[in-house]
Image (cartoon, rainbow, N blue to C red; front, side):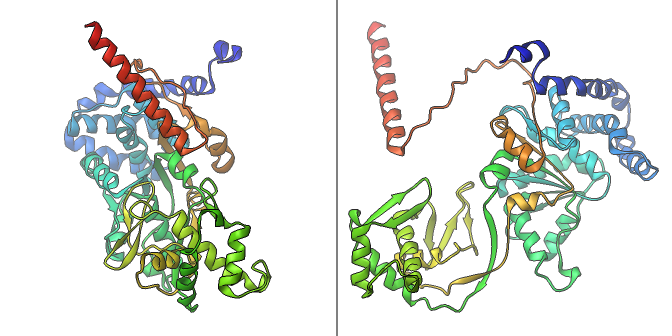
Length: 435
């Protein structure tokens, strides 16, 4: 911590200080809200909507709305938002990122800005990283929202268009970043407006925001159609790659790339009966060989994909969920099919695509929660215009957090883990001996 931070506090400290009068106002309304009957508390929702229609803003009604949610959560789940959770809710409403430690109750925090922003009738999307969390959070928080007269929906993989449209028309909708993104692409491919399932992209609260907006930011969502190219060459390239030895190619796992060495190029020229592998006229051969190399040397069965019922099914690297109907682009999927000996399907052509980065920038307002955001603060600010506010814990942290240790290779990492186990075992043995 710098000398200036010691004197004036960190950026987060200063911002939280500005927020505290709002927090105190919310807490001061506790006794007033506790005296209301269930029906009176529910009617507050209609009162807030009327006040918004008469010209008041969300900021004007924030203290009362948050106090209403706080009381509803107590009556429904026996849980009342702590002061730090109120701070987190205000930060999210302001369109910022709340960094909150694991276990601080981010799910409950999200109910505050979700309820407030849903009062406009323009919809709120709460983004989670997998279907299980989306359904869990919808079921748990949904009881609070429904108690207050709002509707809640959830988007999961198996829903049809009618069910999706109904879920999106709810006041608050839960779902994964993948489902929201693909629904946006499909909506842009329909002929008639009535076939669209999403409405305005108004306000999104993103859980694990660093994973979705930074780690997966450039991941392209792609809707493909069947192409016209022959699949025969994938099998030929696969046959060639199986003849190679380790000195014939180089693998760069960090860049997720693999190339032929000089000896590999010579083998390719002999195998394909060509004079110069690097010639522009041999680009198609180069493409198929590289994809076949990736399929064999980079893509791991039962980790990156599984073979099921004669098909290659992608495994989502972040959730572990099987991604039915999704295919790797640029011929990689066909190369894996050739590798695994299943039917090689026609190469697809891209019909619609968007990255998560571009998709979430379409929203009028976004906010996020995570336990680790400050390390990516510059990217959040530069790409999305989001700042990060570090929310203090409800109680002092007694856990000791050590700095991360980064190794150059996977082997070095596992070797260090093995050495740590040996040292720990020696300490335990010594302890038992002394005892």
